[in-house]
Each structure stands twice: as C-alpha cells, then as structure tokens.
Image (cartoon, rainbow, N blue to C red; front, side, top):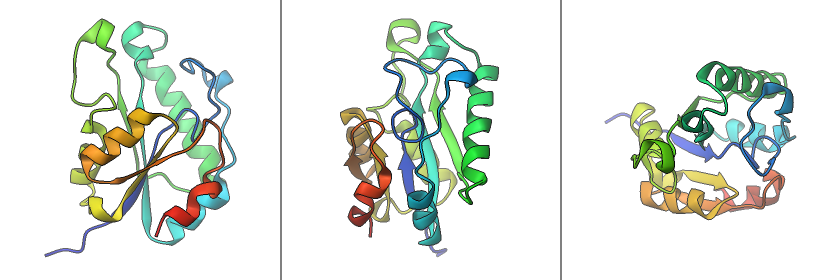
Length: 163
C-alpha cells in the first residue's frame, strides 16, 4: 500500500490574500499576504499546500474564469518567488442563489475531498486553515483538522497547532 501524503488545505481570501469584505474581482485588487515563511516551513515538513476557495462571484457574473485564472497565476507566482509551491487550487464556482446547491461550496467538504482523492492524502494527518467557520466545518466533514484564524491573521500564529 503506497504511503499517503499529508496536506495543509488553505482558504484563499483572508488567508493567502487580503480580505476585501467581498469577492476580489480583479488581479489589480489582489493583495498577497506575507505568509511565505510559515508556508515554506509547512512545505519543508512534507505537507502539500492546497488551496480550497469558494468563488461564487463567478456564478454572480462579477468576474470570469480568465480573471480568476489571472488571480491564481499571480498568487502562485508571488509565493513561488519565496520558494512556496501550491500543489493545486480547487475552487467552487457556484453560488446557491444563482446555481442552486452543490457539493463543493464550503461548508460542504467537496473541494477537500477532491484534493484528498487526487493526491492520495491521509485526512487524519492533514489540516484546513481558514478565516470562516464554514472552512472549519468543511475540514471536519472531510476528516481533517480545522484551524480558524482571523481574516488576514499571519499563519505563523497557528504553526504550533500543526504537527
């Protein structure tokens, strides 16, 4: 049986980039937070770093897939310049008022379950860092430990909670 990976799942807005109070709709407004050292530490401990983010602004028509791809490319590039590589970015493009119910919008665990399956992850050795209660609920539902931080709080503040 192959050894399973361990991961730290990360919400995006308010965790990896500045929380604007609503959707970040343009790459020009996308301000990356300095969590470089903390995430490099986790990466060096063997954790895969996987982003799991609700992007209901897509369903609302506030931005499109190209805009989102540009924001994610920017996020990856800035972190890569600091030696941090995201294994993947999973996002939910749905919004209940526009597209109805889905399995991937947090607090449902669909995004995390996709990552767990795709990368052979052991949920019991994994974590989800988010700035909303729905992130913790999704983590627990997926079998990973949820860690709640305040929006824009440095991830270094919670590093000791991760084995």
